[in-house]
Image 1 (cartoon, rainbow, N blue to C red):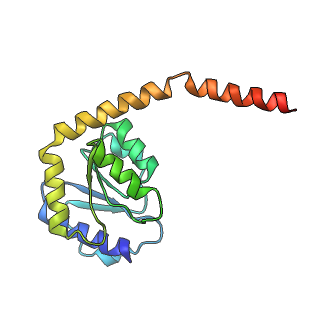
Image 2 (tube, rainbow, N blue to C red; image 1 turned 90 degrees about the horizontal axis):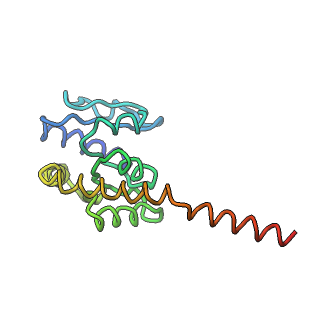
Length: 165
């Protein structure tokens, strides 16, 4: 129900922001006919190869899962995060997105279509600020991924296991 309401609001947002193209990935079990009529500037799919699409996007509206955030960072894409569940990692992840100025956060149950459109305009109006921060974060990710620290940790674990045997 929460997703249906949010997707419906997103169709309203698309109508309010006709100069943006919205691509909505609903998942397997969503009934697309609940969104009819779909605005001309919105395309709806069951699933999409996210990393391929992100390479062509200006921003992403996401639930805030760590994989999606990481993919946005590696593709240099600022985010508008709408956590789905309070008990998962999404609220904390969205707080980090805001803290590091990688994008903005919204409240999936409270934000109206007008509020979502305002946040999109805020994100795109300050686009270079957010994208610069995303690219700086990507550099940090690359440094960490290329570090030898993980190798040292794994070697330590292996060595400890060998001494126990």
